[in-house]
Structures are given as structure tokens and as C-alpha cells.
Length: 195
Image (cartoon, rainbow, N blue to C red; front, side):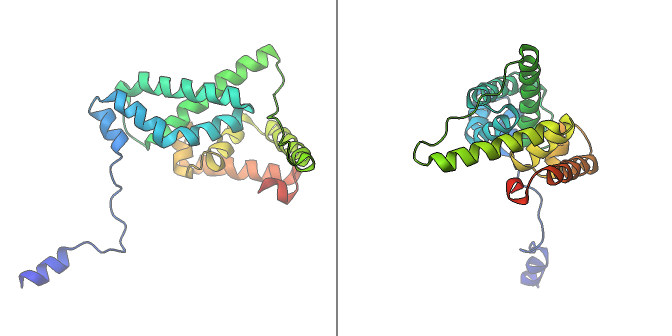
């Protein structure tokens, strides 16, 4: 009888279980902010770097934005509520950091820099630069809110729920923004340029 009770109480391996607690969120909650910052850098720096690069267009500015994001996150850890994922929280901070940099850039009217091409394949590098310029131009035509949602979804690889958390909107609005941005890109770019 006891074996039968244990079998009934055992969780179903196919059933979704509760989300595993995020060790970084636990460090933040415990007040171990220095180790939490190091863990954030190890776990999320690549995602933040891709997000900032997509939003800012230059490696130098992206690196600077990632550093500023992590420093801002460290300063904000005492007020972290843990309502969403740490990754979405960090992407939300990065979004604000990039927006400030873009506003500063707009005021200075400094043109976007282009990453140097690959010297081993000049024709491929030229084609890649042209494609990147067309995609950047198409992204620049999107509404800022749609561009941010699209970049968070596909560059930072956030779920729609995490995009909503990062943008402080509901999930349905995040889905609409991403969908509208994709529709606008599809109307301007060739299918192979969107992939």
C-alpha cells in the first residue's frame, strides 16, 4: 500500500513542473550583489551584447552599453523585485541604456559606423555590408517601440513574455508589436534578408 501511495505522489515526468529558481535571483535576494553581478555577466553578457549591437550598430557602442547595463543593474539590485526573469530585467535595462545612447547620438548627428569587412572574401563582405545597410534602413523605418520589441525577440532571443517584461507592457501588446514589425520588414525586404 505504501509503494502505491508513493507512486501516486510521484510527479509525472512529462508534466510541466514549477520553474526552477534562478540562482542569480537568489543571490540578489540574499544581498550578494557582487557575485550576482559576476553571474549576470557570465550568463547574459552575450545576449546583452547582441541586443546592444542590434540597437546601436557599432561594436564599440554596444560594448559600452553592456558595461553600463551591468553597472546599472548592480546599482538597482537592492530594488529588484524578481517579478520576471533576470534576463528580461537586464534586457529592459539595456533597452533604456541604448535608447539614451541613441538620443545622444541623434543630438550629435553622428552617422552609424560599419564593422570592417572580412578581408578574406571581399565580394561576400560587400554583399553582407549591403544587406546589413538595407536591414538597418528597414529597422530605422519602424516605430521605436516595434523595433525594440523585434530586437528583443529575435536578437536577444527573449520570449514574448520576456519582451513584455523588458518593455513594461502586457504580453499581447508585445506580440502585436513584434508581428507588426515583421509585417513592415516583409513589405520592404526580400525574404532572405529577413532570415
